[in-house]
Image (cartoon, rainbow, N blue to C red; front, side):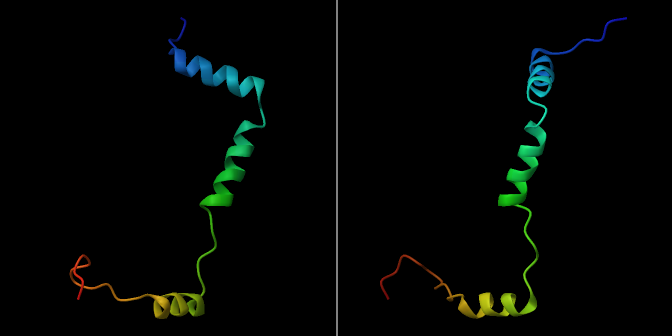
Length: 62
């Protein structure tokens, strides 16, 4: 019995067969932009001290 595959699934299967290194490149890109080490306690304190307090109504000229 043949199993149904949508056009999109077929496209992805063909793409992965043509470029087997594609998934590794995607994971490397994710690691570069999103997977970061957590900040140390000192860095967290420094970032908190550097924040400026926002006024209650930011559009006022006061």
